[in-house]
Length: 537
Image (cartoon, rainbow, N blue to C red; front, side, top):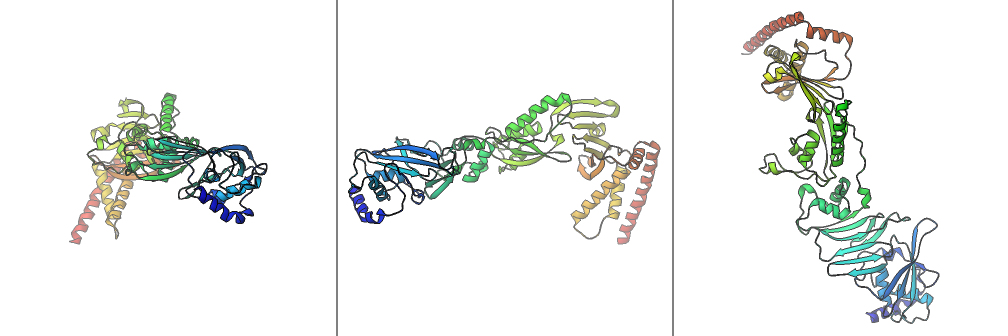
């Protein structure tokens, strides 16, 4: 090898004598290593110590605040310029440059092959792009090398984990990013970041690999890991031996960031401590309320705890495990409810993110409940401030008022089951008034909406004096028949409307008159409908 180096040096000596490769020399005028020659792909630094002593003689920021280093290479006994090139550049292509730099201080050097022990060469460089190997240690299991700029590489020769190599970069002022000459081309890494190479070993869990690769288990860490590797916990594990490379930010940048939760809230002092503990447990797992809807809160679920499962998220949101399967599906796990293993299905949701609307009544954390025999109802108060009034009619399957729910945001929900007379009249009027060309499903929806409006306007025992403005009205199927659901927004009604609805709801004489009129209308409407059918024949 030394004969080759000598021949190469002699062939290019005159060309390099005036080459502007940098001002590398011994003594007080150190050189700047050329970026174009340092930032090369796939350098091969020596895997064993060589007789070249490396030290940093100056470490500073220049006038523009950029990091600069002056590195000293000392040729020890038996050392060569070829080995100095390997240490400084990771290849043998720069022997002549090293020789030229040595001759600037020692013009009597006859050739690259004849350099005396003790020859010192100082190089001033940009540590963000220049990598001079300072130390290397190799055992049967691992290869460790460090560079003068503080970068450290660890390569596992007999890996017991899916991580086969990582390169750690220091946090340092004066550097916006490092450019590392890795296989395939230069890689940009922010200070404090790392390059990690993977080759999957069967049996390693997703969350364990995230922890090892980034040094921190959080939602951001898992999200970045999946984005860069395309290894997704919903399709875990990857094929054995599948290789990936990722470039991660500094570990502390993946720490959980404070999120602003909008609730739930409850002014009742009896609920304060329990509600505070519940919100804290949710936020610890990665669950925050982000938006209010009329009947519930929208939660963002972004799990950063590697141990949290779908069932645990269900208990935190609903107070029970009901709904865990749907949560797992929203997280992306492709398992159907008909799967025979569904009972044992409880995936970890680490690194998964989605939004879910949770109705106030589904947050089944009961504060207290009591019977109100006078009004035939049971009153249940939930931890989130919801008040539920369940009437005896609902338990017995009778028509009339079934339930009133007062939500903590001021909205109210009324559930009413119409009796047979009112329901028949509403259907008949809807049949007469709504029709024409169009999709059958759309026409049926319009008829149901019309019937709901008739029931809301004419049912004599509906508590329309309940505070609020009607926002949504729906007639939907329910066990044992149909019910009307009305959502009232927290907007005061006009005084005239309130007077009329209160009179309709509370005046028994007027209620009786309404029922007689409705009965007559039913007879008329049914007769008209029968006549039309007869005429159509």
